[in-house]
Image (cartoon, rainbow, N blue to C red; front, top):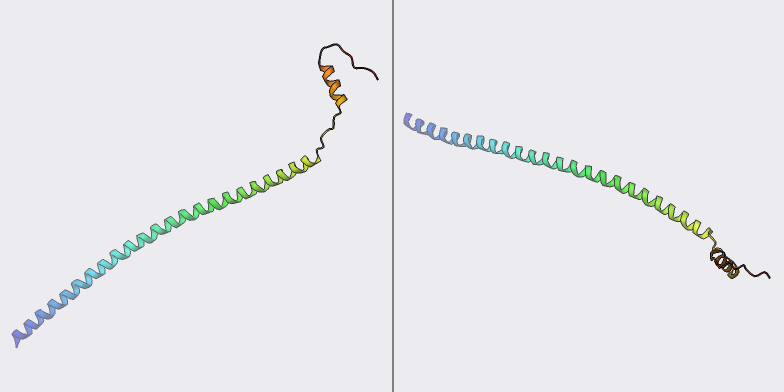
Length: 113
């Protein structure tokens, strides 16, 4: 009986050692996977922060451009109003003739009526 007990103890100890070995290795593997996943999560957080910063800059630029567009539209409206207010000067043929005669050095004087 003593020999059977020794064999059974050896078999049970071997099985316990195998289970212990698997438990330890699985625990280490789980820790490595957890560390790897945590690193990926941290990397993702960093990239998300960068992207959020870029989107903030884009939103600021978008607002600035909208303000510039509004200013340009106001300028255009003012110019169109001024354009409508301008009335071209109607010149007579006699005025043009006098200008030409005054600018030329012919020595002629305009005829008196």
